[in-house]
Length: 282
Ligand SMILES: Nc1ncnc2c1ncn2[C@@H]1O[C@H](COP(=O)(O)OP(=O)(O)OP(=O)(O)O)[C@@H](O)[C@H]1O
Ligand SMILES: [Mg+2]
Image (cartoon, rainbow, N blue to C red):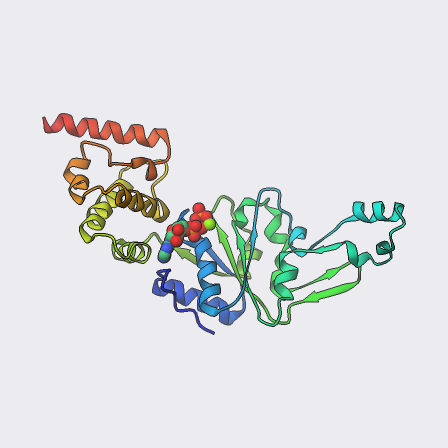
């Protein structure tokens, strides 16, 4: 079982190596990288490429490790008990399996499990999953069952680095940092999304994009997903490559910059730079 990238996703050599290493080691692959660099989509692509079903567990600040294993609905059981329902005799009726349970018991094929944005949860969350991810089994106290993965899922964990992950957790993962795509990779990514886009529009758009990313002091630099949105808008508004020429962009903000720059401080900064360079050119 090997991952080689797909027609809709540009996987660099080092990313492909990391994915295959994690598959071979049967350990979770921890993927970090700037927002919008294709971490979440990677899980979809791995599942598609290996022809496996994908289960997604999206982590929020309130998510607890136990939610991924199972939840026991004691309130429903109490209510049913008061109503004299026969169901109460079997406690298993009130156990709701979580994503890990589903992933461990997926048949006939194994699955790809995406644990998305693990850094959103509280600091204990990764520690609470150490054993479960390592041994891929857990115990259900209410029923006395052990849920064990017969077919270890391919686990992908993403993080935006909002919190440090504990060492013990890191030890159990294979790690990959998605570096920000260089120009050539970015051209390929754009081509995958917009096969019909004009070459010179992409060239000028990428010039403007990388120049914008290089502006010192930006709070939030635009990333792949912003670039893709921007190019889509440029295409639908039929903006010409000439309108994006770099020398003009020094003195005015790029058209439809709302797709690239997402906060007022950055817009301010760019307006000031444009103003200064207009004055210099006078
Ligand atoms: N290598 C790539 N090949 C093709 N498309 C890509 C690639 N990298 C990013 N994209 C596109 O960029 C967009 C954002 O990707 P995605 O949502 O996976 O980012 P992310 O890293 O999960 O971001 P966040 O950290 O904000 O969740 C998607 O539309 C995806 O198709
Ligand atoms: Mg994501």
